[in-house]
Image (cartoon, rainbow, N blue to C red; front, top):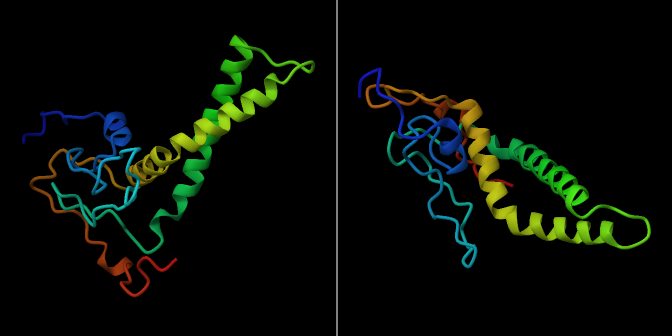
Length: 154
């Protein structure tokens, strides 16, 4: 791959599709997200199956995804509140606010598996940059940051 060749996916499509941020080709998660079968939906590959980029850079690396998921949930809630206010409206004389709360709660519960995966993909993309020459360059070695005794110790 020469320097002028573009990636198959843009940053946004790679992040939203949960692809490796380094090569934008390998899947971050072992299984695709299927709402009828959620067992193991958060199981990530240890490294990218295409370029070998490790997905866990250090112990507890993905703790920060809780903040990312929370921010996305707040943004969705604000967006649904604005849309509800514009199309349906809020009133003190009936239960439209309660209906919005129920609608928003159900929406966030249904979107939660996708939001959790999106938060991990976004968090990883902030720390691992795209490398157009990933075939020639080896991924960075993070082995000194990992402690196998502390892995998955939560």
